[in-house]
Length: 140
Image (cartoon, rainbow, N blue to C red; front, side, top):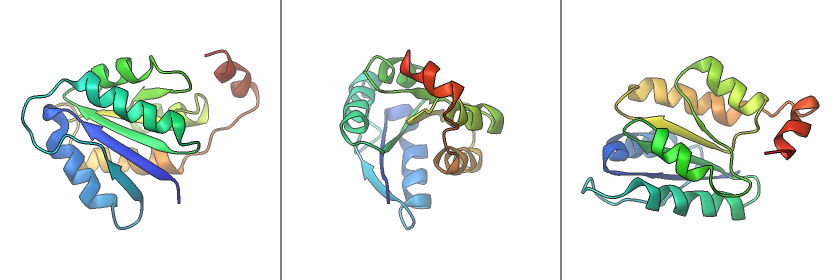
């Protein structure tokens, strides 16, 4: 079973905990914080999670903040990280099929928990197509 690291900031804290509750029975999820909804800086948690994903080959990450955007921008600064801000079934599938994304970022203020659960299931179950896409991923 692949490791899944998860982290949030205060704005994504509730959704992060809902995700852990939903998937903990079937997935190996490692919670990297925060431990409360007290105000924190999202870059600290995005950096922590992206280091873990980068050093654990084959692992995935889930980052949650208010919009998902700040987490994605920060995580993508790390080598070998391809964080995708996901908000629809189509863009979630394509993030895996064509970009081999290894971190999904979600915005708690933009999607409800059931949509988040569905997008995570799609993200984790969709395989990278490789082929012409591999050449492009190697250029990232």
